[in-house]
Structure formats: C-alpha cells, structure tokens
Length: 104
Image (cartoon, rainbow, N blue to C red; front, top):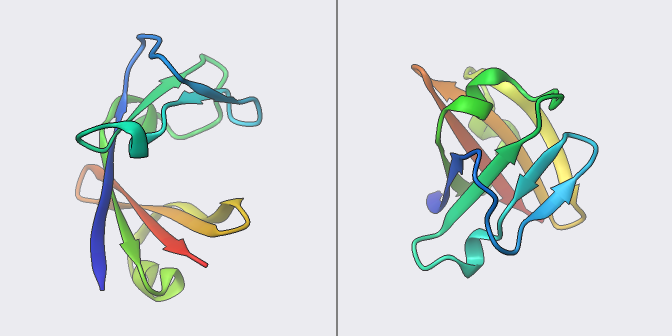
C-alpha cells in the first residue's frame, strides 16, 4: 500500500512555526498543520543534504514496508529514523525526489 502524506517545498522564505534541525542545517514546518499538507523546507548553505532536495519539491508517501519499497530504486537517502515512530528514505523517480515513510 502507498498513501499520499505530504508535499515538501524548498523555499528561502522564513515560515511561521518552523523547527530547526542543526544536524542537517534545515528549518521545516509541520505539514499536519497545513490545510494542503505542505511542508516548507528552508535549507542553510551548509546543509549536507543533496542539492536536488534543496532545489526541487518532493512528494511523500506512507508505505507498509520501507525496505521493500526502495528495493531496485535509485536511493537518494538511505533509510533513517527522524524519531522513534518513523523510518524515512528518499528515492529518485526520473528527476524528482520522492520521500517514502514507514510509521512503526
């Protein structure tokens, strides 16, 4: 099963309610507070994340099995856990980044 979760849009503009992750030099908004499930992403210049994520919007889907979902795909960011209840990976579909999310 694959279910739409949110759209992430890079922007140089500061948005209300941003949270900062110092490990990756990234400010994000909470897509669950957005009527249209938009996550705004504001990268600092020293962010180690791939340029395609810094410059291209991504779509995010929930999946049942993250490891199976990335099998045979072009993996942009290997699976990681931003918190105890979630695993995330980014893949590429043609020139578009796609976020895959597995809630634990």
